[in-house]
Image 1 (tube, rainbow, N blue to C red):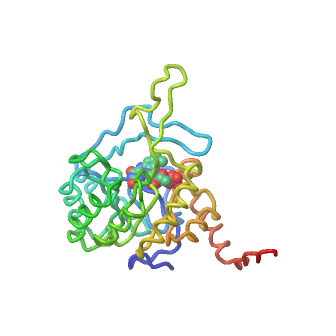
Image 2 (cartoon, rainbow, N blue to C red):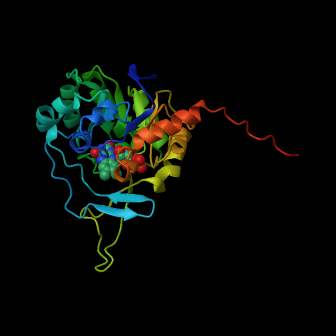
Image 3 (tube, helix red, strand yellow):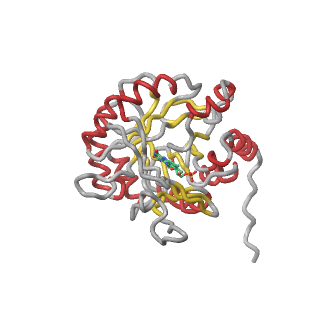
Length: 297
Ligand SMILES: Cc1cc2nc3c(=O)[nH]c(=O)nc-3n(C[C@H](O)[C@H](O)[C@H](O)COP(=O)(O)O)c2cc1C
């Protein structure tokens, strides 16, 4: 059992927001999925105050080691989520973490207040990869904007608040320290890195959104470096993610300072990979650690 911000979890592996549709998976795999749910907590995809259509197609570009997505966070908005998704997700056998995002402090405040009142929700994750309408820059690239946002919403809910950092910040550890100082209970990282692909013939951007977010094994070393950097600056627990495909990748993030690990892109290739990753990780954690060889003189 793991204690994460006072929430008891069976193991270290959860999902990355937006990469596992638990409702669709239940339709595909049946109720057996609920009996052997692969994650120890379920993180929802990002919910915004108003419904969003998402970006025009094409929305995906496959890379040799991952993908670029320009999904654009389509969702039913707060009212649609509360009416249609929350009742279904609350039946999952694990705690529910709801990921929210807004382009003003007040939008985020409305979401935090609404989900803060719901017993079905164990914790909130605040997605900072969203342009602030005032500055045009993502909230999460600026420690001051991040601290202002977290300070504003922290008192509005009596639940753990996880701040999901963007790797596109100049100094993610400074943003993490600002979020911790403003009252965040945990950090999660990394979100996707901005990337682009060109259409093979027209030479125009391939993705409907122009650019998109790079994820998967390609970003794993960046995730590891940023988790280590953030872990050296904050005391709150960290959810590490970015390119986890195997138990060994999860162990790397734990050793770099994470308390939990999230699996994202790998679930698109192998929907139940998290069960395998938990098995592999459990075995690795049970094995004796090798001592580093002493320097040969
Ligand atoms: C298709 C797709 C959709 C995503 N949607 C969201 C989202 O709604 N909210 C969010 O905070 N992160 C979202 N992410 C980012 C992931 O949760 C995760 O931070 C990132 O992909 C890195 O992990 P990975 O390399 O294991 O995929 C999305 C990623 C992908 C690939």
